[in-house]
Image (cartoon, rainbow, N blue to C red; front, side):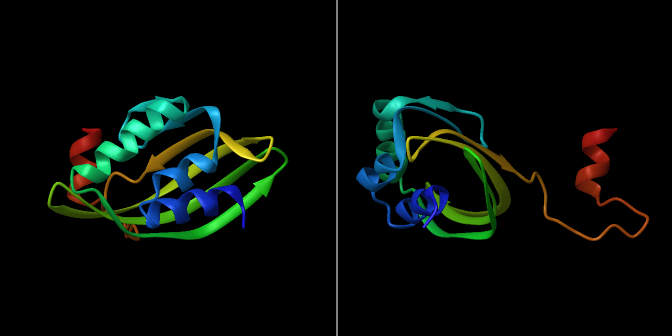
Length: 130
């Protein structure tokens, strides 16, 4: 199992220790929502607090996972609940691996539902680029 697969499996299991076991002690994790978490202590605090505030990974499915040299990339679908609100989005992760651990991990998320373009933009795109 690749490191990103292990990291995502630990999140699905809601297992803080398993999440930390995938990360270098001086890791940098950049969440798609904006926060940057530096090091095990910060990541442990973030994950513990998120879980305590009704955070629940309902599903996190990897659609494509690639490894190249010292890194891994993955495209995925994320389904979660936080503070009573259930949401889904597609995203991607770019990760750097050092000594068998994730040392840098950055997530990106889609900002609207995906759709096939047929000559017209959906309202969400049209309002963000005007």
